[in-house]
Structure formats: C-alpha cells, structure tokens
Amino acid sequence: MENFKFIDRPDSERIKATAEEYHEIDENLVLNFLNFQWTYREMQKQYDALLSQFNLTESRFIILMFLKRSPENMLLPSDISLKLGASRPTVSKLLKAMEQIDLVEKITSSSDKRSAYFKITNKGNETLKAFMPHNFEAVKTIFSQLDLKDLENLKHLLKAINQGTLKLQKEME
Image (cartoon, rainbow, N blue to C red; front, side, top):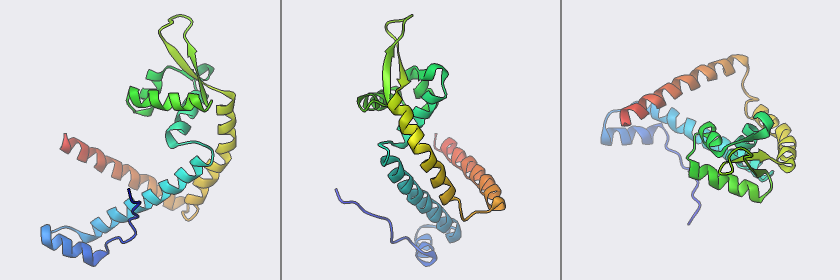
C-alpha cells in the first residue's frame, strides 16, 4: 500500500470550478474546512510522532492518565471503555498490548474472581513521568503563535464547530 500525502490541496479557483459542476457552494467555507482539516492532520501527525518516541499512542497515553488519576491507580476494563468512548473489544486489545509491554498489569478482584482490574505499573508511571514535560512543551509550541485573545476566540470557534458536528451527526441518524 502506498503512502499518499495530501499536499496538492485545492485552492479557491479549483473549489469554485467543482462547486459550479455540482451545485452552488461557498468556496471560502470549503477552503476553510480543508485548511482546518489539513492543519489538524498535520498537528496530529507531529503529536503521534512525539508519542511514539515514548512507545505510546494517544489511546495508551489516555488510559495511563485514567489509571494514574483513579483510586488505587486501577480501573475495570468496562470503566476504561466508558471513559475512552471505545468498545470493550477495542479496550481489551489495547490493555492486552499495554500489559505485554508492562505499562499496566491485570489484577484479579479479591471479591469477584471473574472480574479483573487493570493497574498502572511502575514502568507505566515512569513512562508518564518522562513523557509529560515533552507533552506540555509540544502543546506550548503548537499554540505559540496565538495570544490570549486568539486562544479565547479559538475556544469559541471550536465550540461552534463541535455543535455543527453534532448537528451533522443527528442529521445523519
């Protein structure tokens, strides 16, 4: 499978030509959508590269943070699934892979031998401890071009985009 990069992005004129072919659309709206989408993908690519330096993925990182902030640093897989917003089979695969690299350990419940919790290990804690300064530095770098007013505007814009996304989801149901 080839690795394609979406570098040849359409400009206003190409969008306008496409719009005329199909139906009238606001080419600025489409261009802003494509730029937003491209920016997100590029940001995510860089963030994923940072995570991989610590043998993490976004899901692994989030699970470790859930465990770190939970009572006794452990949770049931069902709780992790709910918190992550992922299916139980997906979370089971993630936890199994994390257990294999010693980021988490499986603890059988003392009250119900059929239940098992997952607990963050010393290696998991050390991984978080090593990663967190880099995480915050990455966030700082990504947003370094924005001042306080820009950040406040971004918060409102993201809220509006999220509301539009939820509206689209409801329309598609």
